Structures are given as C-alpha cells and as structure tokens.
Image (cartoon, rainbow, N blue to C red; front, side):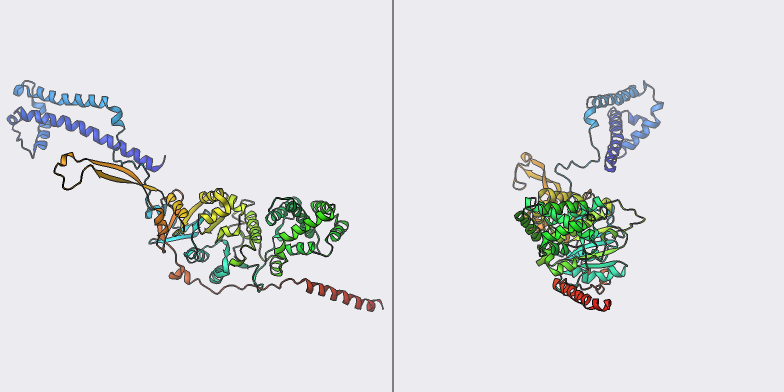
Length: 593
C-alpha cells in the first residue's frame, strides 16, 4: 500500500476514535449537569453554580459526591440524574445504529475532493525524492538548491526552439560534466571547440568525425570495418546497411540491394581490396563491370561468401537492359561516396564504437546545416549501427564499466531511424542513454508520425521544455503539467446594496483550470524552463547558463587536435600503378643478365 493511502486510513481511524467518544460523553455530561441545575438540588450540596465554573464544579461533584447519595436523598436526585444520563445515551446509541453506514463513511481531517485534479508545482522535497541531487549524471536544470543532476540511464527529451539557449543550457554543460562516453551531434562543431579539451584532460579518447569538411580535417569511420567476421552475422550486418542506403521497396532497389550485398561481401573476402563504400562505387563504375564481376566469380568463386557468389551470379544472368537498370539504381544510391572527401572519411576507422563501454570515448559528429539532407543516409548508417552495437548484449560491469550517452541536437533532421524509435524502450537496460533535442512536436511528428512521437514521449523519463513556439506544443505541455481544481463562488444577488440579505444565496462550485495554460507555456520567461519527470510533480526551474558559472568556465580548454585526410584521387592511384609497372619493366632485363 502507498504511504499516502496509509496516512489517509490512519487519519480516519484517529478521527473516529476521538470524535465519537467525545460526542457521547459531552451529551451525557451536559444533560446531567442541566438536570441538577434546573432541579435546584445541586446548591443544597454546597456546589456553587455559575457560567464560568460549571464544567469544573459539575465534574468534581459527579466524581466525589455521587457515591454518597442514596436513591431517596434530595427528592430522588440520584434517580433523576440516572434518568437524565441514560436517556440521552440511549438516544445517541439509537442514532448511531440507524445511521451507521453514513457515520462510517465520514472522512476526518480530509481536504475536499479535487474533482478536476490537484496538480501543483514540485517543492524541494519533491525534487530530492526525484533523485535530482546526484553527484554524477546528466544535467537538466538548476534552482536555488543547486543543479538538477539525473543519475542512471533514463532518457531525456528537450523541446527547445532555435535560439532558445539549448546549447549554453544543456549541450555544453553536459559535455563539461558527463563523465562516461558520449556521441554528440555537433552542428558546426562549436561544442568540440569548447569542451573537447576538458574531456581529453579527463582521460577520454576524443574524435571528430566530419565527413564533409572541405579541408578533409576529420577522423575516419568506416561502417564496413565493423561487419562481423562470422558468416551468418556478416550477411545480416551488410543487409542492414543496404536497407538504410536503399530503403525503397520497389523492384530496382530490391535488385540493387542484392547486388550491393554481393559486391560488399566480395570486397570483404578479397585481401587486395579496400573494404569501403568508395571501393564499392569504383567497382560498379569500372569500364566493364559485367566482365570484371564475371572474372571475380571465376578467380575467387571458392573464396568469397556463398551469398556473394549467388547474388553476383544472379546479376550476371540478367538481360543487358535489366543489368543496366540495376547498375544505374545502385550507382545513384551510392552517389554520395563518389565524393573524394566522403570516400576518404569513410575508408578506415579511427575509433571502435564497440569499445565505448570499456574505454571512455567522445565522438563529435560534425555536420553543417547545408549538408544535413545530403549526408542523411550516412548519418543514419552511423547512428543506427552504433546503437545496434551497443545494445547487442547486456554489459558486464567488470569489463564494461561505462555507459554511453547520445546527445543529439536537432534529432528529427537526421531522418527516421527505427532503431531509435524502438530502442528508446530498452536502451536503458544496456546503459545507453538518449538525450534528444527537438524544436517542437510538429518537427518530431513530421519525421516519426504520431505513433513515433508518442513512443518518444512515453519513454522519456525527463521531458524539459523552454517557451514553446507553437500552440500544439504548448497545449501538449499544458496537458502534461496537469490540471488543478479551483472553487468558484457565485451569489444570487449583489453583495452590496441589497436590503433583504436573507434572500441572497451563495453557490460554490468546482471548476477545472490548467496549472500552466498553453499561452503561459508560449510566454514562459527566457530564463525559465519546465521539467516533467515521470511519477513526480512538474518543476518550474531556471535554465543553466554555463558562462555565468566558474564551475563550467574553468573547464573551457583549447580544443583537441584533428588530423587531415588526403582525399582519394583515382588518377593519382592510376599514375602510381603505371609508374610501378614501368619500374618493373625497366628492372626486369637487369635481373636476367
């Protein structure tokens, strides 16, 4: 039983135990006292009766004189008193018997029922009970008592329009506080510049993956590097990648996915080939791709994966026109990797996501706004592969003592990712935490529809909102905050200038009122926020401003070094090969002499 229910039952038992005996005693005592007074017999016993000491005198007389009286004394005073005492007692008992059910249902020390709800703002004890005063974890706000720190791996969803302070209030403070591994969607790499130095100083491995950097300043990540070496799992991993790159379910995409699977598995098996998306593009755009793939089956047919052989053979058996359509569809889907910058940034891997729970690691995923749409498929491959790796098996805390937080600003712009939609319900058990930042409900609904939005809302333990920028979001927040019951009084006649007051009646009714109206959500002050926590009252608090607190500003250190990649140039590679062949031709006669 919950404590508030136990307290309610205790209050009622205590009320009944006190009230009823008092009522019975007072009834009997007062009746006996008045009988004695009005029969004018008490004075004969030397008891001084007056309005001030009647209660004391009567109690004294009843206790000390009662036993000395005989039935016939003072005109049968004792008999009269017995009658006056027993009469009311019998009446009260009969009343209790006839009204037992009504009396039993009486609620003592109870506030009037709140018909429309009793929502109220959290107090300091509520905040303490919600576990927001932890020493480590995720920062979600601040009040006079200090920062709100949520330990554990429950997820958070932040509603924050553009320019509302989400960077200075959430992203940067958390990157300067969160001690475990983190993957942060860092638009324009501002967060790397401010926080990477401190994270590296804390012993973290720090990487920046910005595939579209025009100068090639980036670390590298190649999704194909992490395809399993186990025969069955290998096919599964590559199929997941192909489904993200070519998601449409029409004929040409189905055939293109099949060929992509075959070519990728072939590249994995061939030790002379680079295992990357760029190499898949080069293979498919070679001078005579049909002939080259036929040679692969002839020379490596016994080495490559059976699925690779089967899929490539099925492609070669198609008519020329059909093969042309499959090649065109596949090349179109892989157009992004024809870019030398993207190719070089995805040709190798500087970090291993599967080690994030063993070694503290920070990855800043850089993506400028103008490249969000163009690189959406690549981002989806990275994020979905990362979350799948981190949720394949339950962590062993001895070998994997750290958790991982995905801090994703402008989350809906990454496109629909089913692993996030489904995984938010179970990631917590794998020590994976999501901190998702969106502008409003329309943005989230536009990517994940109503069902997806509801999934994120219901599985986010912490829902934080700044001033909303549209009514739909404001109305949702108002509903989540809850309603309170307000008493409304009305009079049948004016309170003043009424000569016949006795005919004026008062009507008291309960009405519903939102604790926070939608327009109040829209007009929320710029330095305030609302924090909604599962099973606890809503919290109205202040936003964090890292630049106003020395705790954070003292951690602002110079950013970490990021290497420069040399974009792949097919012409240079071809020239190197030709030079190598010429050297061999020149030196061969000398060896024969």
